[in-house]
Image (cartoon, rainbow, N blue to C red):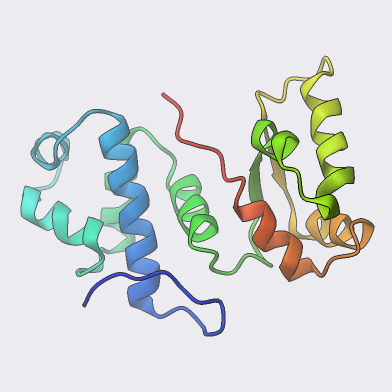
Length: 168
Protein backbone atom coordinates (compact mmCIF):
# COMPACT_ATOMS: atom_id res chain seq x y z
CA UNK A 1 0.00 0.00 0.00
CA UNK A 2 1.52 3.31 -1.11
CA UNK A 3 1.44 6.57 0.82
CA UNK A 4 -0.61 9.37 -0.67
CA UNK A 5 -1.57 12.93 0.14
CA UNK A 6 -4.86 13.36 1.98
CA UNK A 7 -7.62 15.13 0.11
CA UNK A 8 -9.02 16.83 3.20
CA UNK A 9 -12.43 15.31 2.58
CA UNK A 10 -11.97 12.17 4.60
CA UNK A 11 -10.62 11.02 7.91
CA UNK A 12 -7.04 9.78 7.95
CA UNK A 13 -6.50 6.05 8.18
CA UNK A 14 -3.86 4.45 10.40
CA UNK A 15 -1.86 4.02 7.16
CA UNK A 16 -2.09 7.77 6.44
CA UNK A 17 -0.76 8.53 9.91
CA UNK A 18 2.03 5.92 9.60
CA UNK A 19 3.04 7.47 6.26
CA UNK A 20 3.10 10.99 7.71
CA UNK A 21 5.23 9.90 10.67
CA UNK A 22 7.48 7.83 8.41
CA UNK A 23 8.10 10.79 6.09
CA UNK A 24 9.04 12.95 9.08
CA UNK A 25 11.41 10.30 10.49
CA UNK A 26 13.05 9.91 7.07
CA UNK A 27 13.45 13.67 6.70
CA UNK A 28 15.12 13.96 10.08
CA UNK A 29 17.42 11.00 9.37
CA UNK A 30 18.41 12.44 5.99
CA UNK A 31 18.90 15.88 7.53
CA UNK A 32 21.38 14.28 9.93
CA UNK A 33 23.18 12.78 6.92
CA UNK A 34 22.54 9.23 8.12
CA UNK A 35 21.67 6.19 6.06
CA UNK A 36 19.05 3.75 7.32
CA UNK A 37 21.90 1.46 8.33
CA UNK A 38 23.51 4.29 10.32
CA UNK A 39 20.27 4.78 12.24
CA UNK A 40 19.73 1.04 12.79
CA UNK A 41 23.22 0.57 14.23
CA UNK A 42 22.75 3.50 16.65
CA UNK A 43 19.53 2.08 18.12
CA UNK A 44 19.60 0.16 21.42
CA UNK A 45 17.26 -2.52 20.09
CA UNK A 46 18.05 -4.86 17.23
CA UNK A 47 16.26 -3.19 14.35
CA UNK A 48 17.46 -3.78 10.81
CA UNK A 49 17.81 -1.10 8.19
CA UNK A 50 15.00 -2.90 6.32
CA UNK A 51 12.71 -2.45 9.34
CA UNK A 52 13.63 1.26 9.44
CA UNK A 53 12.70 1.44 5.74
CA UNK A 54 9.27 -0.09 6.39
CA UNK A 55 8.59 2.45 9.17
CA UNK A 56 9.67 5.33 6.92
CA UNK A 57 7.48 4.08 4.06
CA UNK A 58 4.46 3.64 6.33
CA UNK A 59 4.10 -0.01 5.33
CA UNK A 60 4.78 -1.17 8.90
CA UNK A 61 3.48 0.43 12.08
CA UNK A 62 5.88 0.84 14.97
CA UNK A 63 4.97 0.67 18.62
CA UNK A 64 5.01 3.80 20.72
CA UNK A 65 8.13 2.52 22.49
CA UNK A 66 9.89 1.95 19.15
CA UNK A 67 8.80 5.38 17.89
CA UNK A 68 10.18 7.07 21.02
CA UNK A 69 13.44 5.12 20.62
CA UNK A 70 13.77 6.20 16.98
CA UNK A 71 13.13 9.83 17.90
CA UNK A 72 15.54 9.72 20.83
CA UNK A 73 18.26 8.23 18.64
CA UNK A 74 17.62 10.92 16.03
CA UNK A 75 17.92 13.55 18.79
CA UNK A 76 14.43 14.94 18.26
CA UNK A 77 11.59 14.90 20.84
CA UNK A 78 8.87 12.39 19.96
CA UNK A 79 6.01 14.89 20.54
CA UNK A 80 7.64 17.31 18.09
CA UNK A 81 8.06 14.58 15.44
CA UNK A 82 4.45 13.45 15.78
CA UNK A 83 3.00 16.97 15.85
CA UNK A 84 5.06 18.14 12.90
CA UNK A 85 4.24 15.00 10.90
CA UNK A 86 0.52 15.50 11.49
CA UNK A 87 0.81 19.21 10.67
CA UNK A 88 2.65 18.62 7.38
CA UNK A 89 0.03 15.99 6.41
CA UNK A 90 -2.78 18.31 7.58
CA UNK A 91 -4.17 15.69 9.95
CA UNK A 92 -6.14 16.98 12.97
CA UNK A 93 -5.08 20.60 12.38
CA UNK A 94 -7.94 21.94 14.52
CA UNK A 95 -6.55 20.23 17.62
CA UNK A 96 -2.81 20.61 17.03
CA UNK A 97 -0.47 23.30 18.28
CA UNK A 98 0.69 24.63 14.90
CA UNK A 99 4.31 25.59 14.37
CA UNK A 100 4.67 28.59 12.05
CA UNK A 101 7.83 29.82 10.36
CA UNK A 102 7.39 33.59 10.65
CA UNK A 103 9.90 34.27 7.85
CA UNK A 104 7.85 32.44 5.24
CA UNK A 105 4.58 33.84 6.58
CA UNK A 106 6.01 37.38 6.32
CA UNK A 107 6.73 36.76 2.62
CA UNK A 108 3.29 35.40 1.73
CA UNK A 109 1.30 37.78 -0.46
CA UNK A 110 -2.26 36.52 0.01
CA UNK A 111 -4.56 39.40 0.92
CA UNK A 112 -6.42 37.43 3.59
CA UNK A 113 -3.16 36.96 5.51
CA UNK A 114 -2.25 40.68 5.49
CA UNK A 115 -2.78 41.17 9.23
CA UNK A 116 -0.83 38.01 10.07
CA UNK A 117 1.95 39.05 7.69
CA UNK A 118 2.26 42.35 9.58
CA UNK A 119 2.18 40.48 12.92
CA UNK A 120 4.94 38.14 11.70
CA UNK A 121 7.10 41.06 10.56
CA UNK A 122 6.61 42.81 13.91
CA UNK A 123 7.69 39.70 15.81
CA UNK A 124 10.70 39.16 13.55
CA UNK A 125 11.86 42.73 14.14
CA UNK A 126 11.17 42.80 17.87
CA UNK A 127 13.63 42.11 20.66
CA UNK A 128 11.83 38.87 21.56
CA UNK A 129 13.52 35.49 21.34
CA UNK A 130 11.36 33.97 18.60
CA UNK A 131 14.06 32.29 16.47
CA UNK A 132 11.64 32.83 13.62
CA UNK A 133 9.17 30.16 14.76
CA UNK A 134 6.05 30.40 16.92
CA UNK A 135 3.78 27.69 18.26
CA UNK A 136 0.09 28.58 18.07
CA UNK A 137 -2.50 26.88 20.27
CA UNK A 138 -5.80 25.90 18.60
CA UNK A 139 -7.70 28.65 20.45
CA UNK A 140 -5.24 31.25 19.16
CA UNK A 141 -5.60 29.99 15.58
CA UNK A 142 -9.38 30.18 15.97
CA UNK A 143 -9.15 33.82 17.14
CA UNK A 144 -6.70 34.69 14.34
CA UNK A 145 -9.12 33.13 11.85
CA UNK A 146 -11.90 35.42 13.06
CA UNK A 147 -9.56 38.40 12.68
CA UNK A 148 -8.76 37.35 9.10
CA UNK A 149 -12.42 36.59 8.26
CA UNK A 150 -11.59 32.91 7.70
CA UNK A 151 -12.83 29.72 9.32
CA UNK A 152 -10.63 27.98 11.82
CA UNK A 153 -10.13 25.12 9.33
CA UNK A 154 -9.20 27.49 6.49
CA UNK A 155 -6.58 29.34 8.53
CA UNK A 156 -5.18 26.15 10.09
CA UNK A 157 -4.70 24.71 6.59
CA UNK A 158 -2.99 27.90 5.42
CA UNK A 159 -0.73 28.00 8.47
CA UNK A 160 0.28 24.38 7.85
CA UNK A 161 1.94 25.66 4.68
CA UNK A 162 4.35 27.57 6.94
CA UNK A 163 5.60 24.53 8.85
CA UNK A 164 9.22 25.31 9.68
CA UNK A 165 11.96 23.40 7.92
CA UNK A 166 14.20 21.05 9.84
CA UNK A 167 17.06 22.69 11.68
CA UNK A 168 20.49 21.29 12.42
